[in-house]
Image 1: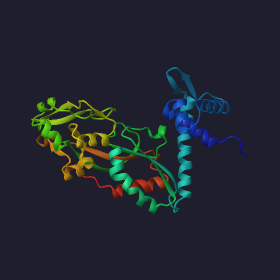
Image 2 (image 1 turned 90 degrees about the horizontal axis):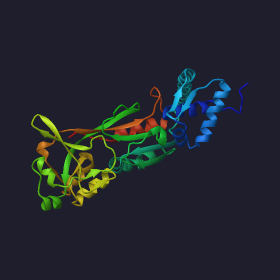
Image 3 (image 1 turned 135 degrees about the horizontal axis):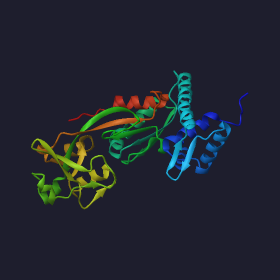
Image 4 (image 1 turned 90 degrees about the vertical axis):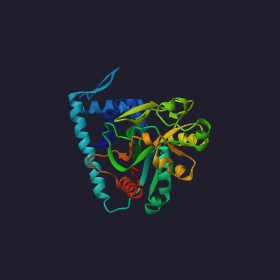
Length: 303
């Protein structure tokens, strides 16, 4: 007879989270538990199994051979549980909370305007949306879906491409009237380049130079905390900025921003992906419905 006091699947989930995040504290934050509660749970699990699963040291956690074997089995069991629940729920309407993290520009331009229609189609779904240009750890932040702009370097996450957008250096007409129009890469030395105060994949701006590419650090008198702040500063005439065209296209069309150094534009693009956690492609219906909806509604082009 199963022991009611032991929730084995919950123990497995905590153990798998500890391994994924490489520590009790990180796992506790993602699970909204205290580090001591996580530590005690793992200790009880080891006591019940009669074997040590992890070795603890100042350098972190290291799985024992028994821990490796148990971890692999836990992953398979949890995937089977998720699959069983998915099959049981097949044909039912998507329901539950979806935690979404998106960059500020994408969120404001594309995501937020789509929310009313998505919720009207799926009235039993609730959305929890955070807009930030910081790259978040989905497991640690308990996010279901994140919208990533740029290449996915070494990511173990599942991803679905939503499109791509060309890049351009832009400035307000007022700024160019005051500081002049840069004609060469060397001219940028006398201009104010709006940078970012967080880590980005590309911290320098690329330009064509003959058959090659040269890069220029985006250093100036001001740095922005997200892409929307950078765009607003450029519109206000503070300096030059480099953005994806999906972000500044409306400003260019309205004359609030002007493209500069286009003859030196290397033609690079930024891809936009919806990334998510998934074991073997198994997703709760609510998350699959959300990603499918984004793929249908978002139309980004490379031009």
